[in-house]
Length: 157
Image 1 (cartoon, one colour):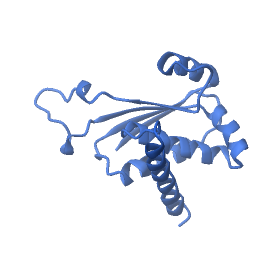
Image 2 (cartoon, rainbow, N blue to C red; image 1 turned 60 degrees about the horizontal axis):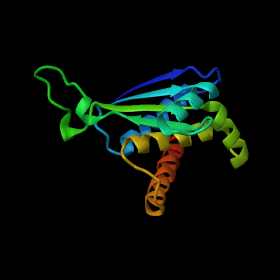
Image 3 (cartoon, rainbow, N blue to C red; image 1 turned 90 degrees about the horizontal axis):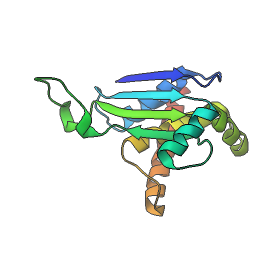
Image 4 (cartoon, one colour; image 1 turned 120 degrees about the vertical axis):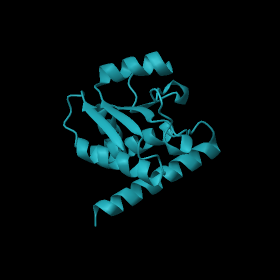
């Protein structure tokens, strides 16, 4: 599994841990090992711009997920899609550590914990989960909690 991360936020972030929780979530969800994911950490100004441009929102948000359109994946001449028909490129997750820090303080946990939660949240969005309806929200947030708990238990061993 290929996961690229770029920290353009100016914040001090443990990118290895963000990569590890993303990899754990993808592995636990049975995502094709040939899949590729990009994680970008940005500052408030850039997140505000992305939120406005793509979601019609005002101000910054904590996480945005941009799934790749399966039909747009070019496997090259003579190549077929990876086994299982999954796209090779899952998409991009954009995180804003400054927003995460504010949310973490309000929730009473660390910024790192909030970034891990947001990473898993973004992965689930890329995999087609949503929380627009109450039933979808229960399913997605329950799965998110289970993935985070299993990741934390592997780290404490």
